[in-house]
Length: 512
Image (tube, rainbow, N blue to C red):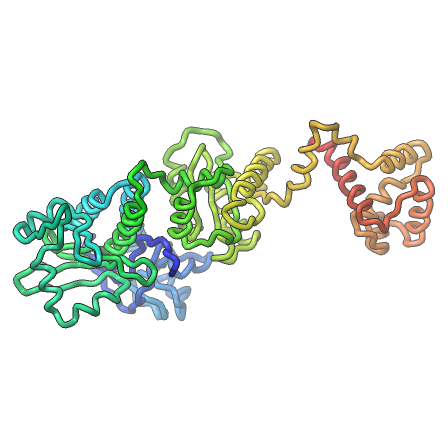
């Protein structure tokens, strides 16, 4: 069965052009962009072009940046690019950007409202009522037998007479079914994966439909009847999102879930805290995200450097994180933003993560802790702990090191676990204390010589250069110090113990 990837309300270029015109801007599409959907807009700047799914806003001074580029754009003057383009004359780039951001914000709000219903355990009827309010037209959902699963109340006003009742089941209005069945092209409507328009009989209303697919299996259809207002292009994307969420609700109903439903955040929090959710809940979460159970995952925690009550900045950051990590799962809990990333679904190195986090940490005054990769949801609690340890270390260090990976503080964490058993200085190799005492009494430099030798991986030329001594002097010191303390420097375990001991001594007994 195909994986179900969670749909988002991302508009196409044509949808954006129509919404801009409805908002009072006079614009037209001068280059098509196909079915490419956009998750945000950004003003073109000297910092380079954004990702392909972020639409550029450009003025006359930006023509050179976009010349020959594949990026889609909204411009106030013709641009010789290759990507899709909306031309909007007699408007400033700033006004266009504000209008586009309003459109994207409205899309996000609609998606949040829909998911809020779904994750709180709403039934399909409530989803239809919300969808009807957003689309300003009545909605119904039927299964593959034309049995009405749910409908908005207004549908009965549009088509009151022709409902067939069988037991407690309500069937689709006969007028719509017959019009569909008598149309020679009707069978083609079963194969569509995107929302389409259906023109019924000349005297009947037009319908917008989105099929409910479970993998390769047709499960039913969401139908929007044109009644209160004409369809807009954005309605197609909204119908597709509603159809997918409707299928999620039908899956829940089919599995007998009549009890209170827990949200995705509840399931994720269970995994982060080492609790085992019900297999059905975890399976639904993975299906919605398009993840596999054994994918490599990474966790990041972000928190403000200044403690305060959650406010507008936290919600703005939450929104920006979705822009920066569109394929991640972002959770806001307890003054912290938690970001889960699937490293098998997108290639992200530690350097790339830091590059993406730096502007956010700077603009929102944040510290960030980054876990090491873990294998599968069963180890997410480990990644969650690692990100907490790294975040705490970032707060301890302060300064401008905003994002700390767990790998940078793993040694400190390991040694700190032994603190209750014995003081850190009792973990230090005794040979080092012997050399320190010998240097103090005899005026030698054996401790610093051994330290430089180990830190330079026993490389003679590099060590001599670091100590600013001749190679012969270095070899002489190494022979003499091993006469004071007999250490087998060819033993990897002994070298590891010595290196850890040096780290403890350098950090002041793990206090730094």
